[in-house]
Amino acid sequence: MHEKKLRAYYSKRGISETDTDLAVDAVKALETYLTSKKMSFETAKLDAIRVYIDSMVSLEISTPEDLLAMARYFYIEGHNEIYIYFTSLLGGIGVIEHINDRLIDRAGPYMAHQIMGSVQKPRIGSEPKAYPSYTGKLMNALENQLPIKTVQEVLAGNNHGISKTAYLKEKEIYESFDNMDLYLADLQKRKIEELQEHCDENKVWYEQKITQEVVDFAAKNQEIMSAVREGNILYSTKIPYNPEKYLETEDSLLKRYYACHCPFARESILSGEAISENWCYCSGGFAKFPYEVILDRPLRVELLESVLKGDSTCRFAIYLEDSNCENNTTKKL
Image 1 (cartoon, one colour):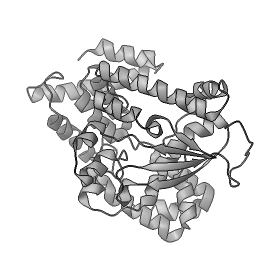
Image 2: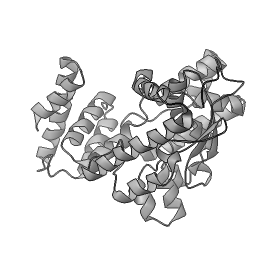
Image 3: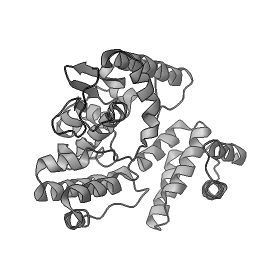
Image 4: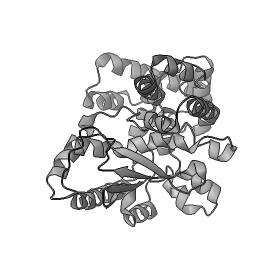
């Protein structure tokens, strides 16, 4: 392995030497396994990596930190397919815990314990196919014991635990414009340029492989990389999780599958396991959070389209002014 590259990556992000050492150990353990199978990081196949991670899950030794270390190593080495596989395992980290916190806040600790404790969550590192059964049962428990509006509010939070500081630069940029429309147009321009850069350099953009067709697709609809304002509502559409495959297929079921980002629900589209569309309010919370930061107030989101109910995309309405939002001060729109 290229240990110096991994250490440099961790150092650049200000990660402690102790945690860096643990990350190196995790990657070295994988290297030992690959060597025993007469493979190296350069020749490793995705199926072999899957077998290794499955064994860690079976032995109950898989941890987010180890998985993240391996993901980062494949990222810096440019093994895009394997890196994207790891993102499918890591995408749900912390989500359920944040939902539990919101549930405690809105329904009380007893109800939260009753609901969340009634369903066993798959261990970190489990294949995505292990999650739909869990998610379906969790949604049944939520919807059977709480009003639907409360369920939606519980789910529509910053459940990935993103720091507000991640969007403070965007807040500065927003405040430099005279109105929201000008900001959204600028955001679209910057994001398309970002996609184009990743396309040209063959770099993974978050979880997505970006082709020229993907760039052109996103450029045609401002809702995908930014939002479109109509009155006091922002309309936002999720970019497909696998945009390359999404654009290639004409099969409506596969389009829904390739559109879905959620590791807790994606496989249900192919398996047929029922998950309430209200689960997508979690994605709605992710969509509205940047605007909550730049506007410095909580916002309400409404699910308009969902792959879980048969639509080919997930689309949301984000309300800029709402009587249910606290500290609702009017700012230039």
